[in-house]
Amino acid sequence: MNQNKKVVLAYSGGLDTSVAIQWLKDQGYDVVACCLDVGEGKDLDFVKEKALTVGATESYVIDAKEEFAQDYALTALQAHAMYEGKYPLVSALSRPLIAKKLVEVAEQSGAHAVAHGCTGKGNDQVRFEVAIQALNPDLEVIAPVREWGWSREEEIDYAKKHNIPIPINLDSPYSIDQNLWGRSNECGILEDPWAAPPEGAYDLTASLETTPNAPDLIEIEFEQGVPIALNGKKMSLSTMILTLNDLAGKHGVGRIDHVENRLVGIKSREVYECPGAVTLMKAHKELEDLTLVKEMAHFKPVIEKKITEMIYEGLWFSPLTPALQAFLKETQQYVNGVARIKLFKGHAIVEGRTSPNSLYNEKLATYTADDEFNHSAAIGFIQLWGLPTKVHSMVQSKKGETVS
Image 1 (tube, rainbow, N blue to C red):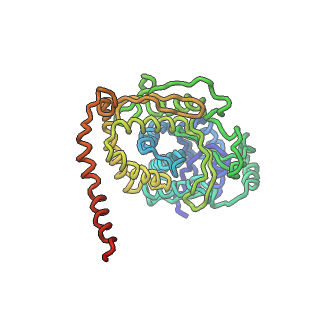
Image 2 (tube, rainbow, N blue to C red):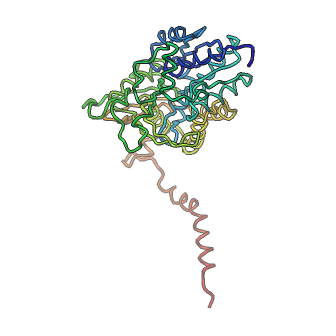
């Protein structure tokens, strides 16, 4: 083993990564714990101190909410990124940022290795390790949970033996990951795709039965595709997303039940809550419909699908990703204006949109006396547009004629 036995661990404060600190110490490592605040709402001071209590030699907490919002969530928003049309990439978006910070802390502290708490069954191990290798190929990557292969009972026994605090919610059947873009939930009864998710599986959204009987109307202002104000109040993107999580969440917006195809080859049933993300993506798409020319609007989904796949499959730091982002940025220069959204009974309904760059011309669209559309021009257009089809029909019908 390398003589420099310092490792930077992505630390969450949960049982797995707390046990990982002791396990890595048993392997001869000094452990530097690193926890990122990406908007999950944890008591980060507690997490920082817990790492030291459990045995880390150093413990860092990094506020990365706005960086996550601007550099990662914004890409997903502008790309309307929904894996398989349903998943807004909650966990997948945060992994490259966490990997980036792990590498930065490792380089600053002189560590030769980084570690994560992923199992050998999920997507996140791929995302972390591919990202770390892209950022610093010289760093060793350690996956304690994957390496020790213990049952839950064996892990708890190990924790008790080493006086590692066991979380009070350990009996919860769910495996949860959360950031400002949303919350993902799996395991327990959710592993049965026929079983309806119990209300206890949700946290960010209200059930339809308990949502308000009156809607909320909100207005979101965009500047070059970036949300800049909510109901006329300017705010940072991270603050807006978290605010919308509360506003839309109380109306039950953003519940997603998805049987998805994992990167590692299995199907899994996941429950997501993404009230802010869903609301913002709907508002943004409606402004694009108002401001993008037809050719751009019809081609952009091709790029959106590829960006979504790159994020889901852990290829954020592939050379293709910034090239796709460059296209995305070019499409946003005229996406300015305001969308008005009704939040009600699980729906975020855009019922109004306005833009100084709107391509909508009411005098061309109207059927009233104000109509300025040149109807006579349609005759020649139809003749030319249909000419290839007409010629094909004429030629092929003659070939089909029977010679007597």
